[in-house]
Image 1 (spheres, helix red, strand yellow):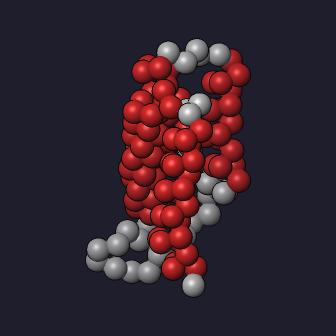
Image 2 (cartoon, rainbow, N blue to C red):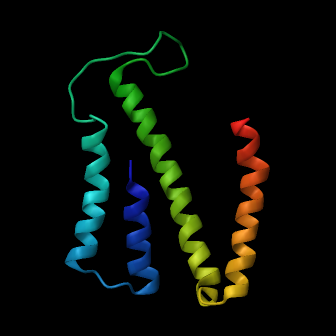
Length: 118
């Protein structure tokens, strides 16, 4: 579910004046359609989850719940990317900032991701 690509693209056009070209729109289109084709979303197989009073059980409920979670995640990712570019876009060529930011990303990966692996 690649809607974050669409949201980031539209935000970049609206906020940063990125030009709307055939290549960029086509690239966004491929990024959205490709995962649907790869995951078999367009198949008509019927499947259900285990019975529960709280969790969705039919295919329609499962797809709706998954899409709601995916759209929420995509909007959060869009806000993160656009806000990061808005706040720190002027520092994209400053090697000291890039080193500082990269080191913080590395440190947080060690703190958060590494324990999940082991």
